[in-house]
Length: 143
Image 1 (cartoon, rainbow, N blue to C red):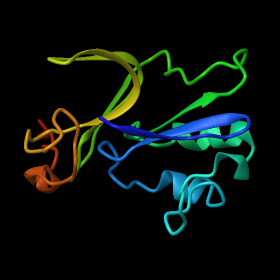
Image 2: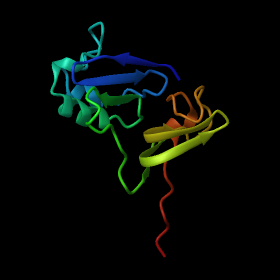
Image 3: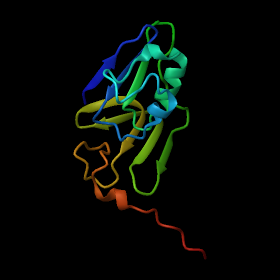
Image 4: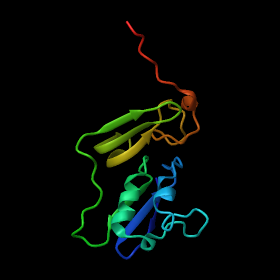
């Protein structure tokens, strides 16, 4: 994974294109900060640092992350209770405070989208290219 760093006065934002599934939470949440029609597309100083952090935390894949410039401000932490969501036509979304362990090692995470069909070119992460886009959850049969 290669993340690009966007520096700000109060908050820095990183973006890892390999993890992005284009949910567009950033574009809807802070259009002055995140604008794909501009270079650079992320300008952290165009928004309040705490609001930018809240918008970044809405990114379901973890492609966006942040760190406050001032050391005394905490960075992102996951919820105390992990959340796993499997919806139709997409990846398995995880949110919480956990560690992802792969052959490359262990990395702390707060948000990721895992591929449910093992067809992604970026396993274990979903890249939206596999047949899981046609997956439907099974419905329990009433007894």
